[in-house]
Length: 85
Image (tube, rainbow, N blue to C red; front, side):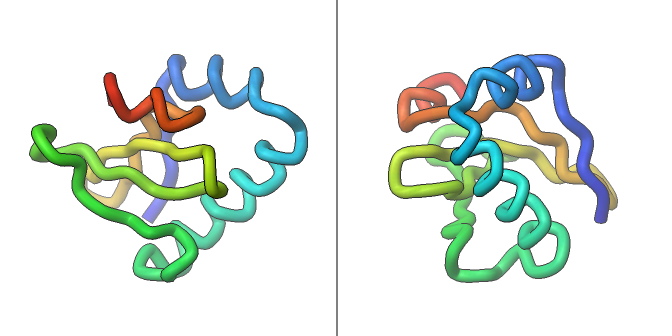
């Protein structure tokens, strides 16, 4: 699998605190190597058939879609990001 970031994801990722970006980098590596790792808490989003959410930390999440062999990173931020994934 590989990662592809949307412009929106990149814009919001760059605004995250440095410590969260560092954790985010680690979590994205885990996503690539073991998407079922318990620390990611990956699950499908209710009401959005093709969108998944993953956990960076207690307060920060990211959303993504899976297309063939690619994770398309959509949004990242605090829980509010899940309102419009």
